[in-house]
Image 1 (cartoon, rainbow, N blue to C red):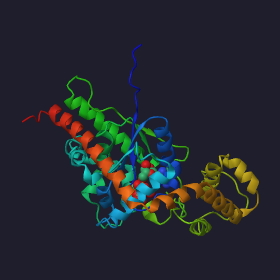
Image 2: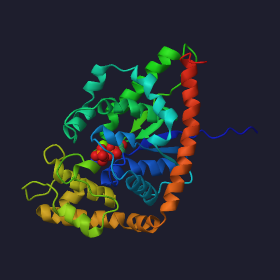
Image 3: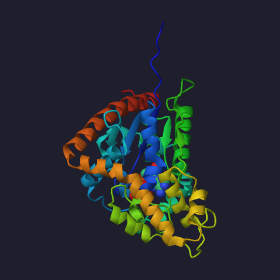
Image 4: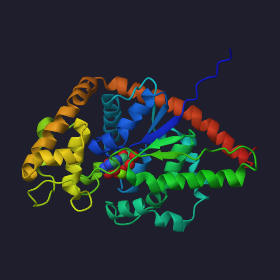
Length: 335
Ligand code: ATP
Ligand code: MG
């Protein structure tokens, strides 16, 4: 009998080192990463340190924030022995892919990207930098360097995934010359909660002061949820169109407790926002308790976190160099 090596899909995703991971990451992407890895996928996680500079002048506390992200990954159950966790700045060949990829997109396409527009609106910079406008192309390099098949992301990333697919297609059409394509077209994988709202009613984001961090204490979690925006209607109902903030809080309870948000709303009835917030606090703290315990246990061993990253960087470099060699060969850069 012949045995075939099992096909292992490659999954790539990542998070900017701009602060600790929050509930939006957890329900939007981290749960899918853990599940796919458990099902046998090869998991790549990029920590895009250069992309911190898309919306601010200086990248601060990088080492601490990068280690904090690795801690969050391990705490939620990513298997660091198997996963390739790496930083942008440590993988030069990945970054070099940006050059040919930039030649495949127009300035008008870059300016039309709705997520980039939203991030420009929330940027801390007075002027839009070239890095802000081009970062979706940088993300294409992140995804294509390892020829990922699947990208578990939140809703804000869909335009970037589309840009990546376009770049892959255009590169293949221009340089593969009828031979087999160099880049596969990756698929986005959305979760059941692709856009969790923060305490101010906007997208929960590390950089917008509206997030509940996975590593926050139970008291801090209670305080943040108490301050969350709701609406004055006493009767609680699940109606994401008309009542986005209340519905997002109901979804959080539903996700934490494995329930339907309508039934959570019915249970609360005329209890108003305070009863809703008390229930959200209890559900979130309960759900995160084992993750927070694990996080606290792992936090003592910074050396381990750095070793995980060093191993990931080495592996990412090996892969990026092979891909870059294929790309430059296809482009006729053989000297
Ligand atoms: P920043 O404010 O610094 O941009 P962020 O919270 O937006 O931070 P990112 O590092 O930009 O986090 O995004 C990492 C991943 O998490 C992406 O796949 C993104 O789609 C997903 N994600 C971020 N916020 C949410 C959210 N509120 N709901 C669902 N998914 C989210
Ligand atoms: Mg973001």
